[in-house]
Picture 1 (tube, rainbow, N blue to C red):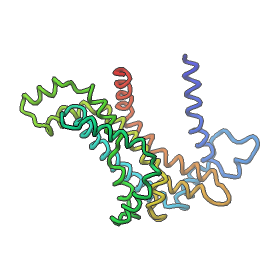
Picture 2 (tube, one colour):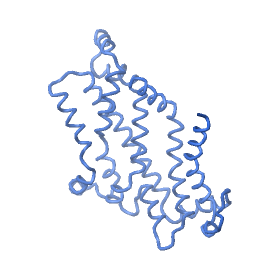
Picture 3 (cartoon, rainbow, N blue to C red):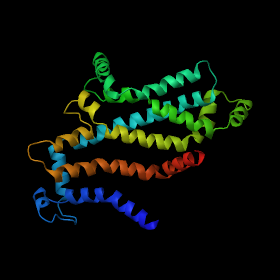
Picture 4 (cartoon, rainbow, N blue to C red):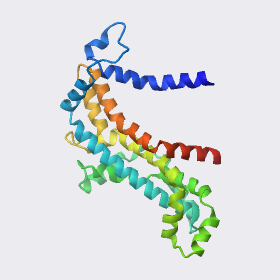
Length: 264
């Protein structure tokens, strides 16, 4: 079992190590046979070239603003809606939840043109609002939180809170939100990664002067002569925020996944 785990760890970590090797060498060195397997000395030089070639600092800031805004919004609205679908009784609850789940079956490409027309009419094209606003609510997030809260929050606990005088908002804030923390961490991580790695929609609605990090990476990878060192350097820079976020939320994410696995 340990040999399998070591092999899995090696194959999982090798692409990241190889990216670091390529990013730390000059592009001309990579054509040698055999190729270098150790780290070179050009990493910081390549970082400077990446920031000189494209507005990478601006792209990182834009991606951070977009991803953070979308994550906070999705987690908040998904937890609120999930609580309503899981624990509150109202007419048409099951049909409405079914309609929300059904929207996940619609291909994203089908809504691109109507969404672009809507963003153009509201004068959001060319601004970060055009990326943030359409992603503020997630059908998957609502379904995910509803399923989690259905099991994580006992009805008896909510009835006790009502008996103590809590209204629905206070009950959500003091009872439901603490119980939803593990699932919220998992949903937040998945949402942040999706928003950070999104390429197509930011490419359509943003200008070249206001790119996100994935659009900036595509610019680094373009051109008649492929500079792999420069492209991989940009990719590593773009990966660092995700690794930091996973380091900060890793305990909650693993706890949430394990809790869901035990309940399943």
